[in-house]
Length: 207
Image (cartoon, rainbow, N blue to C red):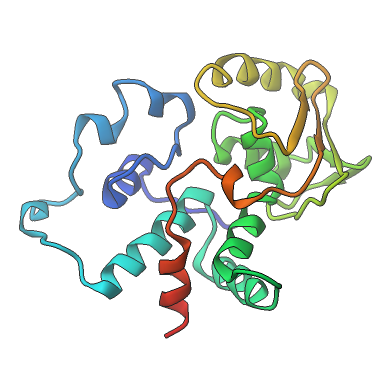
């Protein structure tokens, strides 16, 4: 399973916002963006206002890195979103939101999306009773996600710590003690808390 291996704090600093790639640490004073709120590199002070293309590219990179997907995968999501009824940008975000690693993250079963991916990759997660090992598995309304008993200690610890700083979205019904998540409905645009300008991504790929 391919993953983004660049230093996490540098990715956040490059985008100028917290991408929450290190879980609870991002909520503390140790966060790289809080300590050094400027882009990495020696010449960061020379960078001026980005061009229209630069703003579109940065928005795409921000979202791609936030969800932890590679460029090829992101393009495939966009291609599928263009064939979906409604706004392409919203359809793209919903595809990213319904990845099983993101669902585990939103339910506070993982301190970060990367940790949630590890649960899936190690075959500790099942959907409707069938074990899943692909982080990009797409869930649907009505799906029931369960974590195997051996990993419940991790899940319960995460739920207790992370839930203090994060709100579980209304489209998920979560039972942390049982390690169970029910997808009550598909997410809507207003259910995504991050400040994302998806129209910039549509404009970038539409050129």
